[in-house]
Image (cartoon, rainbow, N blue to C red; front, side):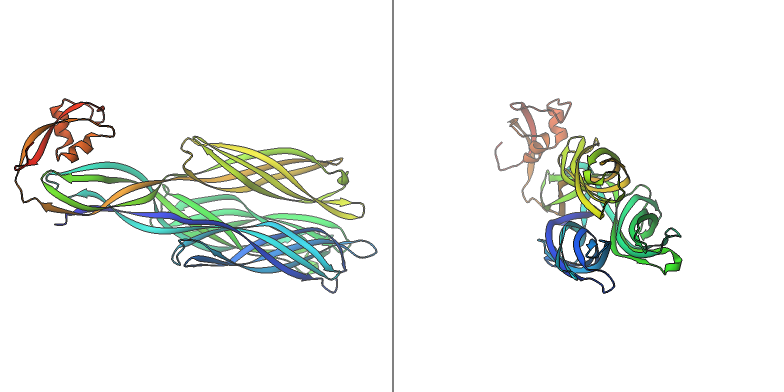
Length: 512
C-alpha cells in the first residue's frame, strides 16, 4: 500500500559538463586599392563575437566573427602608419560529454594569440587562436518527500536543509548605440583600432522583472587626413529587462553580458563623428534560498516499508560579491623616451585560483599592448604585469565553486623619460556556491506483517559508527524508548562499548 506523502518541489540548476578547447581561425586580408603597400606589421588586435549558439546531443556549435584591426608601416616615401580592418568568420564545433539538446550552454570566447604574416605587399594572412570555454547546465525539477500523513508507528529521521533552488532563467538582447564626436579640426581618414568592454555591472529586482544595468566602455584610435593619430573614448549605458516570474528582492541572480556584434564606422566628413553600435545579449539565472524538511531514513515498528532512495546534487550557500584590486606598477620602454603614448590595451588574465577556508587567492597577470610614437612612426610592445589578489569570505571553503569575471574599472598611464607608471583598478565579480549530495526518498509503501509481535528487551553493546537511530531501526524500537530506558539525556551522545537496554518488537516465534 502506497503511503500518502507531502512533497516539495526544488529546481536544481546542475552543471553537467565543462570543457575548454582551442580552435584556429585563419583568413587573408587584401589591402584596399586606395591604401599603400604593407612594409611591416606594428600591431594586430581583435574583438571576438558569438552571434549564434546551438546546443546538440554531445556537442555545441558556436558561430561568430572576429573584428580584426591591423596597424602597419606603409611601404611609402614618408613611412606613414596606416591600418586595415576586416571581419573573419569562424565556426567552433566542440564535443562535450553528457550534453543534450535541451540543456543550456554558457560560453566564454577569448583571443589567446593573434599573428599576422605578410604574404606580399597587398596581402596579409591573419591567424587567431581562440580559446573557447563551455559550461553545460541542466534544469531539473526534483520532488522531495517532506512529510508522511497518518504516521501511526512510522519513525522518521528528519534533517532540515537550506538549498538554492532555481526559480527561473531568461535573456534579452539590447543595443548600445551612440555617435561619438571627434575634434572639430579633425578630418577623419580611417579607424585604426577599436575596443569594447563591459564595466560597472549592476542590477535591480522587482516583481517578475530583473533590471540589468552596466556600461559599455568604447575606445577608438583614428587617423586624421593630415596624419595625426588621435584617441577618443565614450561610455554607453546598457539596460535590459528580463522577465522572471515570482522574482523578488531576496533572490540571488547571476547575470552575464555577451557581445554578439560590434560595429564602428565613420560618419560623413562634415559630421566629425563616429557611429558605434554593440549588440549585447544579457542572460540571467535567478535563485531563491529554500529551507526544506528532508527525510533521510524511515522505518516502521510493526510493518515492512519499501521505498526508493536517490542521490541528488543540490546547490547551497550561494552568494555574489565584488571587490577591488589596485595595481600600481612601473615598467620601462627605452624607445619611447618622452614621445607620445598612443594607446594601451589591457587584458586581465587569471592564471590560477586557490581556494582556502575563508579566502580566495587569485594569481594572474595583466597583458598590456603598448602603442607609442617613435621618430619614424609607431612601435608596439607587449608587457606582462603579474598580480596576486586575495578576497576574504567567511563562507568559502576548498569545496566551493568559484566563478569570476574581472572588469577594468579604471586605468591610467603616465610616461616619464622611458618609464611608464600604471594605475589600474580591477573589479572582481565573484559568484560562490557549494554542491552537496543528499539522499531523497520516494514512493513509500507499507506491507503489513502477517506475524504477531510482542515487546521484549535485549542488551546491546554500542559499536563504532553506531547512532541511536541506527540501533533503534535495527531492533524496530524508537530513539525515545531507548533514551528513556537507559536514562540518556542527550540522544547524540553514546560511546563505543556502552551497554544499552533495547525495548524491542520481535516475532512471537523467535526467542530473544
